[in-house]
Every structure is written in C-alpha cells, then in structure tokens.
Amino acid sequence: MNPLAQQLNATIERENPHIYAMLSSLGKAIYFPKVGILSQSAEAKSKAKKFNATIGIATEGGQPMHLKVIQDTLSAYNPKDIYEYAPPAGKPELRAAWREKMIKENPSLAGKSFGNPVVTNALTHGLSIVADLFADAGDAVVIPNKNWENYELTFGVRRGAEIVEYPLYNEEERFNSAGLREALLAQKSKGKAIVVLNFPNNPTGYTPNAKEGEEIVAAIRDAAEAGVNVVVVTDDAYFGLFFEDSLQESLFGKLADLHERVLAIKVDGATKEEYVWGFRVGFITFASPSESLLAALEQKTLGIIRATISSGAHPSQTFVLHALQAPEFGAQKAEKFNIMKGRANRVKELLDSGRYGDVWGYYPFNSGYFMCLKLKDVPAETVRQRLLDEYGIGTIALGETDLRVAFSCIEEPYLEELYDTIYKAVQDVTVASK
Image (cartoon, rainbow, N blue to C red; front, side, top):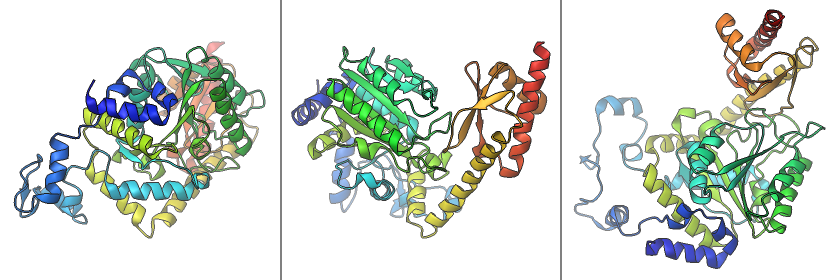
C-alpha cells in the first residue's frame, strides 16, 4: 500500500477507529498524490514568475488560449475563470460560498464541525464517491422501498453492496422510522451499514416533519449504540423545495455529531436547487469533530476524483459562483420556488377533489419535483404505455401499482388536463381488461 494511503489510514484510525472500519478496501487504498504533476504545478503557480512550463494548458497573451467563437458567447467571464483546469476539490471561492449557504439554510449546523464542501460532478458523482470509499461487496445499503433506481447501480452493481429495503411509509402514512431501525439493527452481525436518506424523496416527493426527523435520528443512534458503524448519507438533491409543514433543513446537521459510530455525509448540489441541471455541479461534505480526520477524508475523496474525472468542469463552477454572489439571487430563487409550490398545491387540490378517487390513491407528498399515484386495479406499466401511445403523455411506472408524475415540468394551467388524461387512460385500460 502506498505510504500516503497508510498515513491517511493511520490518522483516521487514530481519530476514530469506527470510521476507519467503515472504509472499503478501495477507501483504505486510495490517496491523493502529494508528489506529482498537480502538486508540482501548484508549487510552480506560486513561484514560477518567469515561465511556468508545468500544467497541460495552452496560453496566449498571458491568458488561457481560447477560440473567439466560444469566448464571444461567454464574454461576461474572464478566460482564467472558464478555460483553466479547476482544482480537483473545486473552485475555492465556490466551496466557501456553498459552505456559507449551507450554514445559513441549516440552523442545526450551528456549532457543528464539518469539512469544506468538495465539488463533485453533480450528485450521482458524490454518491459514487461515497460508494467507492465505504462500500464493499456484501455491505448493507439501507434505503426505503420508494427510491431512486440509481442507488442500485451506484452501490449494488458498481460496488457489490447488498441493497436492504424497508417500507417508506408506516400504517399512518408517515415516515417508517421503525422500519429503518429494524433494517439497521438487522446488520448487527455485519457491524456496518450505509444509510441513504433522500428528502424530498424521489419518487414520492415526501419529506418528514420535525417529529419524524427526530425519530430517524433516534433510529440511527440506536443502531450505533447497538454496535453498528453507520455511514449515513443525506441525498439532498431537491433541498429547499419544502412546500408544507415538513423539515425545512437537511438532517445532516442533526447527524453531524450524533455518535462516534456515525459518519454523516451530505451530498447536494446546484443541479436542482438552482435549476442548473446540465451544469453538473454538486458537493460532498463530511462531518466530524476531528479536523485531522476531516482532512484525511478530503484527501481520500480527492484521490477518487483524481482517479476518475480528475477535476470538475470550471465554467459551470464559475457560473454557479456568479449566481450565488449576485444580489438578485435570493429574489429570483424565491420566485421559482413559488411557481413550484403553486404547482404542487394545484396537484394536491385536484387529487383531493374526489374526481379520481375510484381508480387511484396517492402517496403523501409535500416537497420536491414529484408525486406518486397508487393505481388500484390496473398495472402501472400498462397505463404508462397507454398514456404515451394514445395521448402523447410521459410518466414513470414503478412496480405494479405506482405511477410517478413530475409536476415540476408541467405548468400550472395544464395540470388539470394532465390528471384528467391520466384518469382517462386508467379507464381505457380498465375497459380493455374486461
């Protein structure tokens, strides 16, 4: 094993042996090279005042070489902020701005010790880093039975982990914290579990309320006290889109200093929060009371980034930073939030009107981009195909009964037509099946 990896492992094991035990075989082996092209280039950047012949970019006239046909469309930006490589950890100013944003929007982070966010190529990349660092073959990844299918690919297919599901809702149609606790305690013989908490939930659009949040934290604490090392990841892809009386912040703050056997990791990003899906700007943040442990985890994260994408795209990081620093940012974001909230409220108004109750129910939703219908008598996939082929409407079938509808991409005046047409498609399928 490389001596740098050994040094990082020694630091982590000294600071918290439980977190060291959470590392995968790859997580233990990975490191960020301190002697190599990047480190030598960084040294040259600060000291090579005459000629810097280190890093692989081309320069012209004292700035990065570029094509006019590209720069003409980006003339508001200095070439050095879009053409050069971004550091593997991301643009330093962006990392600082995002950390400041996290603290402002998550009051429970006050006084907590957590690292500087590391820039990822959006959230899937952040989750992939978690999987690489902590998931080995056979490790349990605990998620609700209403989940984003990419978890299976990221943790299961790529890393060989075992996906362990529990029902998202209990009998009162609230978050099933008892199911989470049971699934975690079932991993006691393994001594380790990875938990992914995704709120607002994809596909259901559900976020727990404050009491449910406390129950979730208690379930994780109970598992830790029972001897299970828990890597808990808050997948906050749709953070901030809270339309009703639910948690208004990430559980990351409550989990940050929960127990020595709990490692809290926040994965979030500008992707959905700032409506810049194609920019692919995300972040991964670790919590720990130990600064040296945080530094070691960051170095291992940078090793994964260096070995996969090398560094994230510089232009999109610059664009997001510019937005965060703009005086108009807050007002413009509030405007879009109100549009999204209006759509969610209109959907709920339609569903509660009584006009569709004979063919479907719906899972509780209060946030995010989506909601899920629960069809009563016809297969969701058959309805999905009918909608697509006969009416030109796209939805997502999940399992036998569930049909996910993204109200985020349907303007409010058209929502009634959308749900009326879904209802008609269900009726069509019902008649055809008799």
